Length: 128
Length: 218
Image (cartoon, rainbow over all chains, first blue to last red; front, side):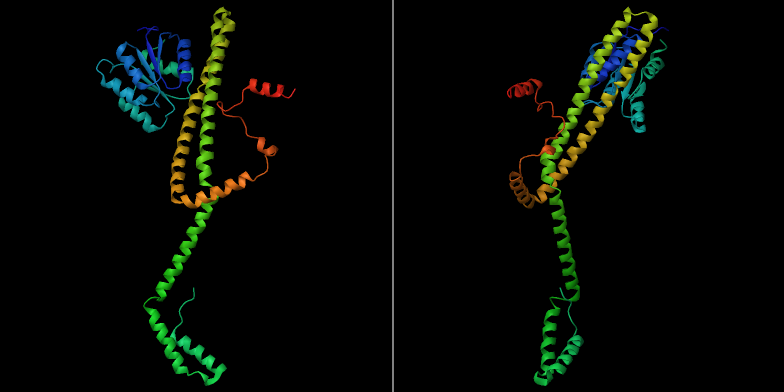
């Protein structure tokens, strides 16, 4: 099955610089339909308003963290199957376990590189 | 504080006294008086009590020394000057690195945009280089998060220093006033006092103001 390179992707991070970096890396990988949110609540509203094919979110945000966003997504009957990648500096085992238990699709530790991003995306949406 | 003497000690001393002074003083009378005094003290000043008083005195001295040492650390200066300055400087680092990172990103985005007009042989390594710059710019987020942790630690220290100041309030306030008086009497700053490092963005003098100042000397 071919990957829809035009699928809408929502990236969530409270650091605008990080949003810019992820957007540029996704663009290099061929994904141009990228939307942004700077906090969990805004992200959740956007997700409920529009049909995204993938979410890439930071963890450490206020007031709603990436983990809370993930739990909200998984608790929403319309969004529960949505692929969700966590990109975060939180690299402790308990963080990864908590994210996995909450239903994360994959987990990328910051700082990351383009190859890792591509690999994790491929593992979820297929090779592109 | 001297320890109490026993009746036998007293007897020996009185005997020695008698040898030196003769029998001008009735020894039995003296012993009777001394024993009477000792007996009257037992209820109030037993050996245990005296040891306890000695311990309390030592503890009081220790607390007084500790208070002096704490006061020498100038916790009021730490709370009012050092901690806020450190926090402001750290926040300025976050702001400056973010600004610099965005400038770098903008520049490489322009370079990447130009790859469309390059030959594939030229465009490929340029795109690779641009990717590496994007990856390297991750540092800004990590740096920001680390600094945020430090700022939180400083805020925690500030709370503890506040508690300390409440405990020693009056004494420290007196010392602070004394220091202010001493500072006011200090001579004008020397060259060393001019080395303050970069100013915070809001406080920094602008180049135009410096130019105007220099021009005012002409």
